[in-house]
Length: 309
Image (cartoon, rainbow, N blue to C red; front, top):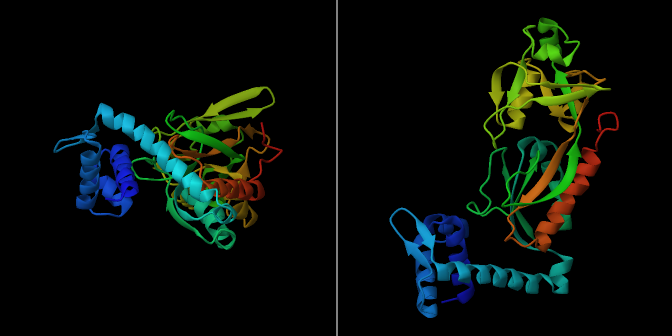
């Protein structure tokens, strides 16, 4: 029995509460993971897990052992990355999940430079706007817009996204140009494109300010989406008014595909965070990925002075 492999397998079973899920994330067979945990229990002469046909629960001894295993695995990773060669060139597999527009417009086009800088990092990038179970899916970090409310995660603030309100010329030609944000809540024939946040399963109102005047606009929609690229495509198709980060809108505005609305009004910027589980040490490869995201956002999506709160 390789004790390192056995401890790693045990930790993944605890985190996923499943031998099957642990095996999938470790790219091993379920039989191999089961045998490693059984061998570990035999060596320690204690029962680490209670198994039923439906679920796996950690025992009291298993919980105490898990806390030490996590620290030990992190220390072993530290020992490797502290070597001068490892510190100079972070390496290993990094699993991340990022919003689809951010991936398409900013991160993916910059990946050749990232790979040239860190050729020994294997980056597995999930692209979605969904809720991600970081532990259960063995994801190292997620990049998300909006406040991180999950108390089980550690979040690093990496950027603030300036927001604006936009519509396609075709929409404005048919519905007219609204003169005030309240027109979007009135029965004036205007509609928005709804964006459903995965954390709540709902749309939410946007706060807008002009001097001392403040309004919250919910709007009426015929179509809603939970993916940023689809949301943008719906606005470009003239299905309604959009609230967008400026980095998503600026090229379309320049080409005349979107028109900026309510330019005298301000919206609070949307914070962007990198979040990761507290039991995942910020490894060298994760640290350079976070720094890379910060660098890219500072270049591509600085907060506009005109809209910054």
